[in-house]
Amino acid sequence: MTLHEKELRAVYTDTLIELMTENSKVVCLEADLGKSSGTVPRVWEAFPDRFFDVGVAEANMIGISAGLANEGMIPFCATFTPFATRRAYDQITISIAYAENPVKIVGTAPGITTAKNGATHMCFQDLAIMRAMPNMRVYCPADVYELRAVVRYMAASKKPEYMQLIREVHAPIFDEDYEFDPLKARVLDEGSDVTLVTTGLTTQFARKAVAELKQEGILAEHIHYPSVKPFDVETLLSSVKKTNAVVTAENQNVIGGLGGAVCEVLAENYPAKVKRLGAQDRFGEVGDVPYLSATLGFSANDIAAACREMKATA
Amino acid sequence: MEMERIDSQEALDQLAREFRYIITDIMCRAGGGHIGGSLSLVEIIITLYFRIMNLKPDEPRWQDRDRFILSKGHAGPTLYTALAYRGFFPKDVLLTLNANGTQLPSHVDQVITPGVDQTAGSLGQGLSCANGIALACKLAKRSNTVFCVVGDGESQEGQIWEAAMFAAHHKLDNLVVITDYNKMQIDAEVEKIVSLEPVVDKWRSFGWEVFEMDGHDWDDIYNTLNKAMAVKDKPAMIVAHTVKAKGNVCYENRIECHFISIPDENERQRVIGGVCAAGEEGPFEFNWTEGKQE
Image (cartoon, rainbow over all chains, first blue to last red; front, side, top):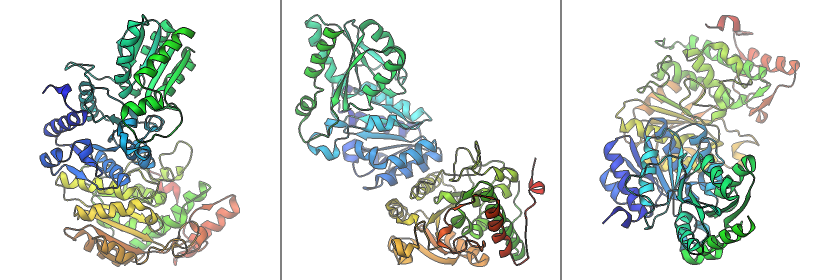
């Protein structure tokens, strides 16, 4: 089986096992959703002394991770995105970010990928709230190669970091040689008609939209941001100076996340018209990913339509 | 700097008087502060820092040191006084409490204050951090002890009890936690807000070895800490019966002592007088000039 035939969570687990084999300071924490992250049973069985399932107690998991990091350990702690972020937001803010304890927080099943769990588990604000926290970095890898590189980068970095982890199988975008640099956005397609900015899941959706637009003769410059914070300003500005029209798409509320970051950068540097796709300030609901992405307005079709509209008005 | 252990009752009493004066004085100079919960911890923190804990003040992050997590981070001034007396920083730095640009903020901060092991102040979080620190020490096979102080009001936070379950489950016998049971919180007595009772039974039922002590009695504190450190296969909880604002007659055991404001010189004189009058030895004033270190 090639790497990209695997589920992303399996690659997260594989990478964590590699890291824990290489470095005895790497530890894994879960809050009763290890089966969902992929670490139960594999990490637990491989490293019973460095795997801690804290039970259904996310605030405590964050605090324990902070204490471990304070002592020089490298804790990766994971649970569903709402519980990994908003549930323990003050604990993350004070015990991790303010205290400069370099914990690695992993939010699984981001946004609509939690699907049938519905609105209670469908977090649309983790990018916004984690981005608003000083000292915190925010990553959204889009395929297995990037995921592996981001996890390895996090293990080596001395910063508090948050990463969204999509669990399922997704098409490969990058390859074995991929190297992650949080200050380097990836131009996946070059074009001069419209700048299309995506991250994580919507990078997958946008691939299809860009191909469809190309057949119509619309050339979208598609930029994937694996890091929403820190944010690569230069790549965005150089693209928008060509296109003067921007579409952002994210598996989030449109307030404060990727679209927010893009608008902040453009407003201060190079004002241009932006259309933000994502949940339009609403909660989620139960459904499958195709239904939810279409209902919320950030499916491949929605992305293509927004690019057409922005090109027409540019 | 090697610590000179302080074991005589007389020397400990003198140190406590100095601490109480300094804590009151630096708060008054700062325009106010959390006097109640700082003064209730004086004997406990002195015992830890001058009779129990193994530290290297010239190497604050020495790996084998004992750890101290002040989960009720608002009692920072008492910890800062102990750190200054142990030589982590000069005593006159205490005068900068809460001043602009200070390294001594009202709530403890591991990044800016030498000797502070864990940032705390948003209540309920420090015990979880202490769990992580104790786990890391066990993984590194260190023989040190991780001490943590939680407040009684703080123990109304759910996270305290998440941490309580975890520590017992993982048999963190290198963890000794003290509840500063001064029976008061900001709005009223703990009993009137949300009772912790039966607090000893609660901790015992969570799988902890539980002790009680008089948090102002030198021998009781010292002996109980030693018993708690000897516990095997369980974390230890010491419920310390204390008096809020102990030793300042203006505020001792008064509900308004949690945080005091010092608006003017008259009030400053009154509150300083409260701590001087409390000493059996008569008025005491710390000489800041002599306390100044290079």
